[in-house]
Length: 221
Length: 221
DNA sequence: AATAATTTTTAGATCAATCTAAATTTTTTT
DNA sequence: AAAAAAATTTAGATTGATCTAAAAATTATT
Ligand SMILES: [Mn+2]
Ligand SMILES: [Mn+2]
Ligand SMILES: [Mn+2]
Ligand SMILES: [Mn+2]
Image 1 (tube, rainbow over the protein chains, first blue to last red):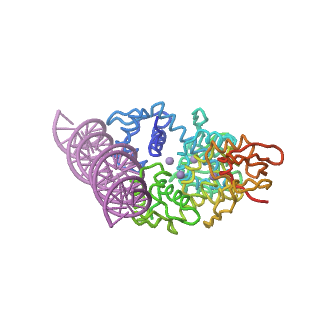
Image 2: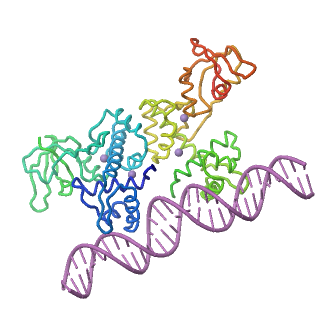
Image 3: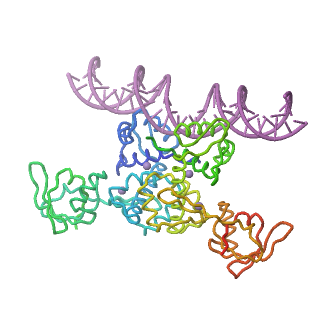
């Protein structure tokens, strides 16, 4: 049986991400957007992936992953996140620098390698952005965090992840002193623009915009 | 300026290997052999590499690397060997298991990554097979070892590297208890087939065939 | 030096992944 | 329910890396 190409793996990973935990149908245009290609190219690839039994595809109806496709996608995600842990924990990269490199490393095809890397890293459960790492059997459990916009004034929550993975956002958090595990207390919310004053780790206060709040995943304690 | 593809990098690396330290011309057929492709495909690729200024190529005359091509080739070799060190030293792979994986990892394109990996590994000078690792500036100095067939009876030498990198050969050495750094003393050479009796680390004796002797690099002490 | 053998290149396809432009289908609006 | 708009697919090209078969150039042999 033939291997999947980088391109195919990227499609599967993106379909997984876009279909969310409910496994909704993903549209051709959404994929064109995410893969930075044209809709016509997406259609071609969808026919191929369907051919290989990796997606359910009926013309004009959008796509979902098959069991087989889901397995491939989750394995790519596992590799991506393990490599990110390696880059940050072992090589000293910042969390804002690792995505693009992991985007390449995730396609290195060796089960043996992944399992040894996982052991070397101490079987981490989360990547540097707080995203859960699927286990060797392909189980991926998304913890149900809340978005900071759903938190009331006075509540103390813990920062557990981000929705936006863009370097610029991560660097913005660095400058604000917000990292995974930070304790955040909302002290004030401005009605006008929903910007907020927050206290970080009970020691410094700062303003954050709605844009930032919308991209922070937190947990009640 | 466009990046070099995996394929181009592999060609450059192979041209480097085949042209040896004298920088001899490499033939189309030799490349076809090494790349497991047909001569016609090689010709196509050579035109492209010449176009990009990475090789000197005149039809029917064979090829040599340009300065630019040499630089790319050495960088790929540097990455290959650093990743091999990582796989053996950090992930616990055997020296017979790492070549194919490094063959993929060598193409991951990030200078930042290579330099951090190099530092993480403690700036190793040699890979798990005894091959020298080029430095960050692209200096690659081949130590001049001798082949075991050039050693006399009674001489004690140190095992420094291998000419054959095939897993089967490396496993054969494992079974024989010969590793990098082993002290080898030739106690007898059979005229008929040039097989030899050798003593390893002053503690055990064994027979090795000419085939093995021809592939062992050693150093006088 | 002529002929034969070998090596290398050219010609013409194929396959994967992409594109643009045009056609078709679905969805939304009137 | 038509018409208009949007989304999707098809048709036909292009590019990179490969192939086979045939032609051309080089090298070796008589
Ligand atoms: Mn990727
Ligand atoms: Mn991540
Ligand atoms: Mn390679
Ligand atoms: Mn090696």
